[in-house]
Amino acid sequence: MNEITTSYLAKKVKGNLIGDINPVKGVFTFLNRAKPGDVVIRHRIDENGITIASKKGVSCIITQNPTVKAVETSKKVKLPLIITPKIEFANAFALKWAVKTFAHDSLRVVVTGTNGKSTTAHMIYKILTLAGYSTYTNTDAKSEFNTLIDPVVAVQIAEFENINDESINAMVIEVSEVQGWLDKLMKDHASIMTSAIDPNVLVITNVGLDHIGLVNSIDETFNEIYGSLEALSQRSKHDNKLKKNNLKKRYAILNSDDPLLLKMGKLIQKQDSINILSHGSIENGSTYQNITLKSDGIYHCSKLFMKTEEFPFSSKHFLQNTMAAIDTCIALNIDEKVIKQGISSYKQLERRFTILGKDPLIIDDFAHNPDGIVATIKSAAKMCENTLYIVFAIRGSRGSTINGLNSKALVNGLKGLDHTIIVTSSAEAVDSANTVKQNEMDIVLKTLKENHLKYVYIENLYPALEYTLKSAKNTDAILLIGAQGMDPASEAIMKINKNFDTE
Image 1 (tube, rainbow, N blue to C red):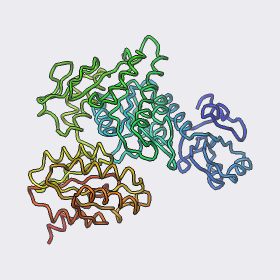
Image 2 (image 1 turned 60 degrees about the vertical axis):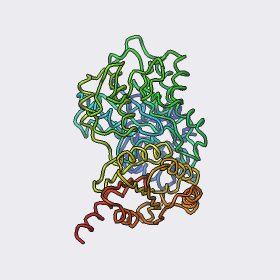
Image 3 (image 1 turned 135 degrees about the vertical axis):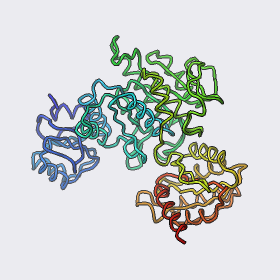
Image 4 (image 1 turned 45 degrees about the vertical axis):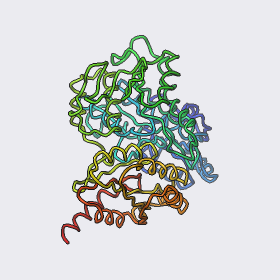
């Protein structure tokens, strides 16, 4: 870290420095991975953490919540301690520093929104890699690294060259649209992180309710997501006339099927600081829609770009994500042949409408909020010949509000369908952070009863899956739906099927 001191760092994270003004060396990281000269970022720290950090020889520690003894110990061992009012300031600075230090001239894409972030980011990553870019992404099957509430992405960027034997020249970073810590909203999270990454392209997939408790209305969610668009606009105002990477302007990629994103486009368009491109299945007359989904394929500026039969998957949400990826890669000047090749050969992340078996058809999806649940049910229903079996995992330790909304979405999605519902708490399959509380189970079952939907409740996941597999006929379809509570399902399905085979 050239010319960075503890005093300078304290100012950048709006914090209070306790200790000496020392030069800072190394990278931003976690306590358990720290090496001499590194900066440790930690939400909370006690005297034991200070002692460990001191022995490791770190430059300083940034925290939001030190104990009294931690402060005393830091003074005693003469380890600089920076106390910041918001830990996201520290993580944003770490991210900004890592990008500037290790990927300064890279193409950069940020993907945010309520649904479809991971698939969209992953598809863009695959296309850029196919185009020859050494590409970093924080997207993974379980979306573990998209929160940006700790320095994990900064660490991964810093380590990329050592692991891959080449430096980063493109990155696709997924940013959570709403984030919190200890049940408190980290206000402006998407805005702060988008500004830190300083992207060429910002993709917003949609606006929907998910993180109930952190935000309690669609308006709050809108404002949090819109902050990323404002951040892109503000960064664009500082651009020089000669753009890097041959991009004349920064781009915002919006889903025009979402009326709230149309609203965002109109608001930001007045600033005339960024290019807006949109995509959708409805030709809504917006001046900036250039990608349109029709019955025979996806069109770019009224010209057929890819035929329907060329897509590896046909669900509505997959096609929405595909249009976003096409829009992004066109904005980045990626060759059309490479884009088409990347899409036609694309293999989805785990638990993104993943087909686990046939006869009966078994579909596994991470749908964990109302919009995602309805969309997934509709897509699965189109593939079902007879009865649609739904194995529905309650969201553990997320509160009764989101579970109430999810169960209402289940009701709405199943209207008019021949179905059977199996509800599970996945009690034996989740950790303490995802354990279903009594009030969460009560609201789900109450909603189903009030709407006259029959169901079977089975507390544990494995028996719930076994019951479903034994009940379903070969012409039926099984949809496994839910967040963390359904994560172990694919492995469990394999074991159950093997047991069936040996009986």
